[in-house]
Image 1: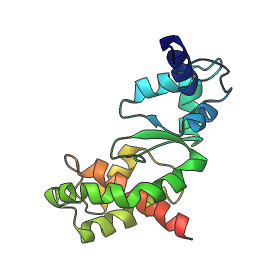
Image 2: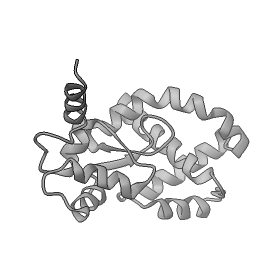
Image 3: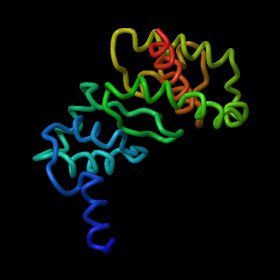
Amino acid sequence: MLADELVRRRMVAQRLWGRHPRRPEEAVRALLGVQAQDHRPARWAVGQRTEGATDAAVRRAIAEGRIVRTHVLRPTWHLVHRDDARWLLALTAPRILARVASRHRQLGLDGGVRRRALRAIERAVAAGPRTREEVGEALVAAGVDTDGQRLPHLLMVGARARHRERAAA
């Protein structure tokens, strides 16, 4: 295969060349997931793959829950289509949680802390989506320490537990 053909195939597969979806969530779905540890470049990546996209349109898709930012393929953040979030989280949860078990021990996130955190997270999101800061405040109000890396790890555990339960139902 010639280098030019290899480049062409790669650019088409990455949805950078060719026809682009009209909606940001369709671009995310076509890729299955977009790494999103750095939120601004992740939005840019989605915008590059969406016809006529603006940053406001990508932000709106995230704010409205059409695109979900979660820990899906590994402990870092990814953007995924809302319809793919549950099955991806259920599929990857056992491996990811096993990989972070030693870190959870270091952070003092034993079973009791995780259960208390999950109850607080469920109460916080019962009325609808919440920001990271809002969930953090709910955890603190429930007596769960969120210092350092505890909050992101509790959010990751919460997302996986919630989606695992729904997938099993």
